[in-house]
Each structure stands twice: as C-alpha cells, then as structure tokens.
Image (cartoon, rainbow over all chains, first blue to last red; front, side):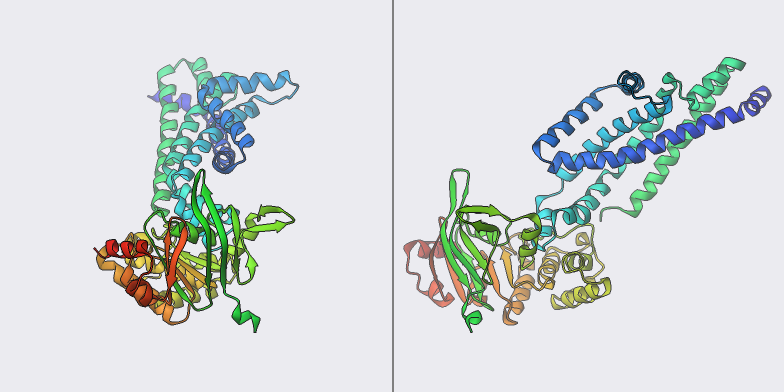
Length: 217
Length: 258
C-alpha cells in the first residue's frame, strides 16, 4: 500500500493531466454534440425533405458505427483530404459527431411524442413557428430527454477512453504509461477505474438534481 | 356606417377535401359582431373542420374566409392562390381565439403562464402588464386562486376555463369553441358552459361547435345545422329546435335527445 501511494505521488502530474484531458474531451463533446443534436433533431422532424434525408443518413451511419471506428476514421480520413487535425482534435470530432447523432435521435423522439394539440394551441394564439419551437415544444422536449441526455453524458466519458488508441493523453493512456513504468498493473487500473466511477456518479447526481428542478408537472 | 353592416366573419363557398373525401362542399356562413352562433350536426358533418379552417389550422381548397373584411389564409393574385407565410398566418390567427376539445394547455407553464405566453410574445406586452391581464381573466373564469397552479394540478373543468381565459386574454375579434365540453366529466360540464354563457352575455362574438343541445338553445342567437359538408338549415334557436324544417334535422334532434 505504501509503495502504491509513493508511486501515486510520483505519477500525480501525469494522472492529473490525463484526468483533465478526459474531462475536457467529455465536456466539449457533450456541449457541442448537444447543440448539434438539437439542430439535427429539429431538422429530422420539421426540416425540408432533402435536408431531412441527409440528417437521417448521418444519424443512422453514426449510430451504426462503433465509436472506436469513428475515432480511427476521424484520425485517418481528414489527413487524406489534406486537413491536418491533432490527435485530440480528431478525437473530439469523432465524439462530437457520435454525440450529435445520438442526441439528434433522442430530440426527434421527444418532439414527435408531444401531442399535436400543443402546436395547434400555440398557433391559435398567434405564435410563429420559431416561437412555438422555443416556448412550447423545446421546453417540453428537453424536460423529457433529460434522463437520456445525462446517460449520454456518462457514455461519452466512457467513450473518451478510446481516444487513447490514437495517442490522446487522457486518463487511460496516462495510466497505461504509468503502469508501463512501475508494473503496478492492478493498483493503477483500479485507481483509474475509481476516477471514472466517481465522475459518472457525479454526473448522475447532478442529473438527478437537475431533473428535480425542472420536473414536468 | 358600412363597417357596422359588414359581418365580422364571412365564409364564402368554402370547399375542403381530405384526399378524395370532400368534407366541406361550399359552405356559406356569416357571423355578425357580438353574435353567438352555434353549429350542430352529427359527427363527420364538417363542423369542426369548418372551425379549424377559420382558425387557419386547416388549409382549404377554394372559396374564401373574410375576417373583418380581410381575406385570411391565402393571397389571391391574378388566378393564382397562395398560402400566406408563417408570419402572416400567425398574425391572422391571433385575430381569432380558439378553445379546443382537449384543452391543450401548455403543461410546463402555470395557468397564468399559459395566458401570458401570447400576451408577451405575440402582443409583446411587458411582463407585469401581461401578468395583470392574466390575473384579470383568471378572475373572470373564477380561478383567481389558481394562477400559479400547473395544468396537471387542475381539474378538467378548471383546465378548460384556463384555456378559455387564454383565448380571450388575447382580445380576439372572434372566439371559436370546438366541442369544449366533450372531454369533460358530466359534473364538470356545467361550470364551463356557465363561463361561456357569461362571455356571450358580455358581448363576445362566439362561433360554437357543440353537442350540448340545451346549451346551444340557451346561449345562441342563431343555430346552424350542418349535414354532409353543407349547411342544411339555420335560424333562431326556437325555430331550429321547435320547428325543424328538414327531415334530417328533425331526425338528428330526435337522436340527440335520446
């Protein structure tokens, strides 16, 4: 135990760096992915046919592809067409596209489950379509997707471990490097696992608090 | 003087079809200001569709609807007829208020919030002014104490009264009531009908679709009987209910009574 703590002390900076990277990748991809997903979801329900079909294709391809493949694809494909992304940028791109597709599908379902009477009532008092979306439909849709959205957040934290494959120094890769040096395999992998667990428990708790605040009455 | 002579609502040879079923076959109807008109008829006769056309929730195929002299829903230029833009339709919809069979209150907003949404976003009133109008109307429908309740915390009758307040707070020229008691438990019907009656007495212009024959008789100046997409008979309630001319109306009234 004592050796673990002294090794942990030696590795503290590397671990911290990895942890921050993991959080950074997760938060950025959740935020941008959610914005993208909202847009996709709205288009999937109300968009003109051509755009809708394009979005449908995007969503289906993303959801049908393993995240690891997405990450490798966004690492290798852009450089072929002359676009140079760093490993971190490529990883973020993959996570954002993955998140956007999932959130898009969730938003679509939520919007379609709102009874048509809501739109009719909003129309009849004279609201324009963008106003109906902003004040009537999205507030209801967002409340109902909250639990799934939180879940997607936790999924993304876990998916971010896959960025280690393309050499992004996030928590898992840093842990691997540390283990490679001191051979305390079990201890450090358990420690990393504990950190992931704590982050996801935190997300879950924050989500529950949020749900209580905006509960659909 | 012409302004007073012209009916508030003029529906002229309105045709509407859903695919190959013609639901409205040339309807002509006029409603004057402060008049209360009830439309009765069996289901499928086109009465709800007619109301939805007036509120521009349905498109129609030919004919026109004039509200206060303004042709609504379409722009007719030359021989082309085009649906108006979302913005123009929204403005015209705000001239009429509609109350639905299934209330359609916004579940994420309180009773006052439901009423304030249109006042704030369509009429662009400041928040406190919208709030005071909302409270005034909630008082009018007897729900002053329920301003901060959410729809799910209200009974069906209370929800429908909030919906009535929501429609009227926008100060519409014409209020459309679409079978507003059909989704209510029998013991809640009366409170809603009393609310409508008081609006009628205060001079609101109402176009009502209803299955409540006694109510139609009590509250209306004129009753319209629709049958298979057309107006088959209309007249003062005493005449329609007391002395129906067409055999179809007589038959309808017999079956409605039983």
